[in-house]
Length: 364
Length: 131
Image (cartoon, rainbow over all chains, first blue to last red; front, side):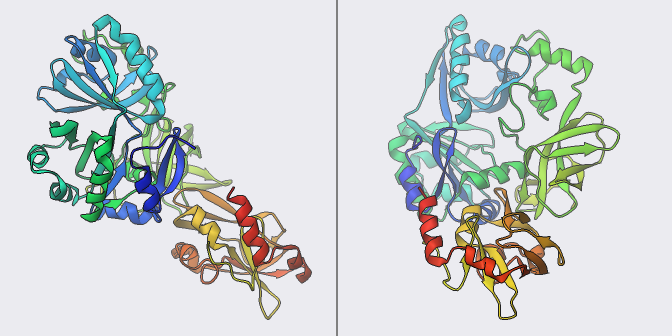
């Protein structure tokens, strides 16, 4: 028996197939992963992401702390409520975790980190907090629900209180704001669709979930969450990058803020060195030309240029084709082959995302 | 509990086998197996004429979640494969014991079917696996 989120009973009642995810009992699907996937692309689905850790960071020097701790630069956050996606690196430039950080006030930021990396993230945050007199406060009493899809915002507006709705409606993409009763509403997500991620007190979560369900928002499991984020070209920590790979080898160079050049952040020196020498590897998208399914850890063979490996592979319900991310030698060109059960299948190297806002972004 | 037809035989690896009037045996995966695997997105079929050996993998069903081997419940020669699954692998989910059949074989020895479980034994086997 793993840990249970405040929505555990809702998952059981909805027929969710529960699996272990980072020590939590989480729904992989509620019947059909593919139908759930399509519902998010065409209408609205909701995910229980309460297993992720919400961490509040406060103190006068919290901005300096985050400028030192993160590869992306929180100075880019000029407006209150603005969110930033960043990697948190170790000294050798490896990725400890990828995360979202919201700028709330000069002395208050909120961070959302992965469930599987919670313990080491908190230890790392604490380890560096003292030098900046920053207080690191996890918020395990909060739940988190992501509502995603072209109809997601309208459905959420239907069920929010008037006060919360007044906060949610004007939110621009990648902004979050507090509503009454410790609710935090953010226009962010992990699917490539519009929608919200709502952080709310655990006690409020079941009733809100039921209201959303009554409004026609479909409970969607972690299975569809994975195929949706893969189609959307979004990395998964632990599969596509980890402490042994840098952002430069993980298609995350865009999240590294090199300027200003005098900003010292953990891992900078190692990244600078790697940038100078060339990373050697890159993370690319693959589209399988032959029939079959791409899976994590399958071997990728590049003619005359060595080998690589699939880091995330699956079947794309939207494209009806197998797609993947693969870490391959930097010289890799437009095509490669993937070894599947002893056979070599042809794949095309493409630039993710595969799908955004319900539409294919690559030619089939 | 999923429906388990009484006229079929079952392997511990969750294949079913049906003895046809012409002596051939049709093979598929059980409803319980498809339910565990989830939405099918690809089926790698054996080839007609291929010799298969009992308890050895001879086909693959891939759901959106994972790839899973299909084992020959008994030895024999593949005489027909369900080509329709190439375009509609979801048929395995929709009708595992019927239109979702995977291949038909001519058994090396029809008596080998006696070594498989009947519906009652398979249901009991599923119950033990659930724990």
